[in-house]
Length: 218
Ligand code: E4P
Image 1: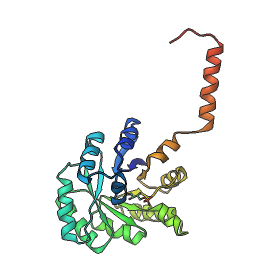
Image 2: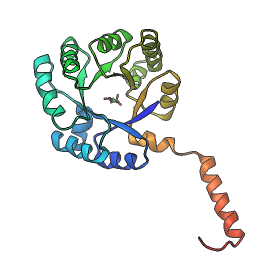
Image 3: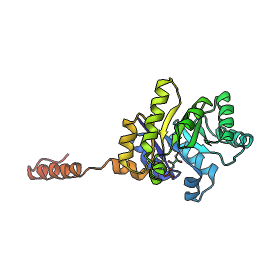
Image 4: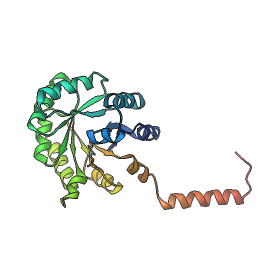
């Protein structure tokens, strides 16, 4: 399973990129709004930071023809831009147009496997089932990832599953075991995944022993 970073914060993207683990970036209108910056300027800066990985940028219109218009403007910024579209009938129409044009798409706000299957058949490059928001309404978000992964495997579907709405590191492990191709993860979750108390205790002990042995300096 690959990692995308789920943020529009360029500093977080820069820090995660330096770790060498980021295979893509996802944004959404809420994440863009949180930064209080111009949308296009933000996306352009993200392109300069991460270079040649897929960067999802979301359209705002709810009408297919306008989604196509907005998506084309975003796609013109870089061949790495992935047009993020809502899982609606209009979103599917636009997905199908982009698929024929060879422009990558990410169908978002997926909460059922039938939605994922339709998005894949419309030609979506990526489908984004939201785990955390299902958990929030007392459903088991991870069951959806498992179901979609099984369906895609059985039918040889090439669309990649992005486990989205990831809230903590247990979601990451479960998504990997459930067969998700990608997890899109907030920076704080990536950071928390690097940590273990035994790692910290081990470093402290190694350094204390080294000091005690009075070794020459590096
Ligand atoms: C990513 O594609 C989604 O927009 C994002 O993961 C949603 O996360 P949230 O449910 O925490 O807002």
